[in-house]
Structures are given as structure tokens and as C-alpha cells.
Image (cartoon, rainbow, N blue to C red):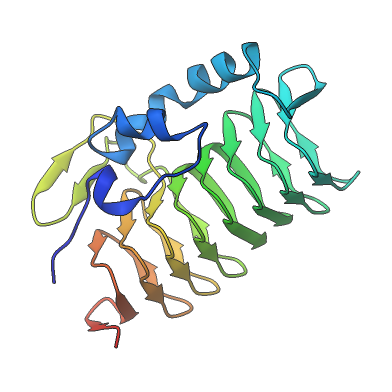
Length: 220
């Protein structure tokens, strides 16, 4: 099974505000150091339909934000997104349209494309989540190695990123089961599903079902 890691292989970014940003980077983790500056430029020149609701917090149309949620700048929330009670957005986060950021989920330095769901007790730090990606309850993107060293992406080749903090890269349609841990630099291919309670590390092929690290089958 081919383990794809390039931006154009993992994402079909049709979001009009993010498409050019995605085209700039051959590998998705290369975006991570530039998310904050991209968001600041976006907020400084907001497109039609976006409203500044607090300093450094820009939201699109029909966004639902529960009063018990916390949003720190700089953040951009796409149209039709729902932010539920207890959500904690720590800044440098931009979402596409119709996302769900749910109960007690925490996000920082992350990009969510359209219709992403992180609905229950999720941690998403230094990560990129593709269209319709879904994280089950309690699934987390671990973004820092225990030894503090820079993250290497372990695919068919070893990709030295030079970054200490990388969470997970979830391609379009990736579905992560409840209670999974995505270790730093994990890449999940398009339309791949992962069984609950799996500890993930490395690069996983598209159109697959990950039952365990030693049991990956092609989706039929």
C-alpha cells in the first residue's frame, strides 16, 4: 500500500480562503509555522460575510458559539460552524465551513478544512485536518515527543521536519476511532478509518481500515 504524504495527495482543498495557502506547500507540516501569520493577514483583510466579534476573532455567517466556549486570538471560524460548550480554542486556528468543535475539545495552531468534526474531548494541536475528517470521542493528536527532539515523518522515506511540535495530518475523509492516540507526525490517508483505542505512529495508506498497527486492510 502506498503511503502518501504530499499536500496535493492528501487534500482536495476547494475552500476559497485556504486553497492558495495549501498550494504553497509541498508537504502539509510545512504549513504549521505559518498558520498564525496567515490568520493575521486574513483578519486584517476580511472577506465579505465575516465579522470581528472580539479582537483577533473573526467569524463567518451562521456560526453558533456556546457561551461556555473560550476562543483566544488569532482565530478564524468558517461559516456554519458550531462551537459547543467547553470548547477551548487557544489561538492560531482557522476552520473551513460547517465544522464542529465540541464539548471540552482543545485546539491550537491548527487548520480544519470543511465539515471537520472534533466533537468530544479531543485535543488537536499543530495539526491539519482535511475535509470531512472526524475524530471520535477522546481521540487526541499528541504533538510533542517525550524526548523533545524534532519530529520525523516515518513513511516510505524518512522526512526530517525540523519541527519540535507536529500533531497529526488527517487527509480528507479520515475517521479516527474513540480513544485513539495519534503520536507526533502521524499521517492518515484519504478515507481511512481507524479502530478505537489504537496508538498510531507513522504514515497510513488511503482507503484502508486500520484494525491495529500490524493489521491494516484495504477498504472494499
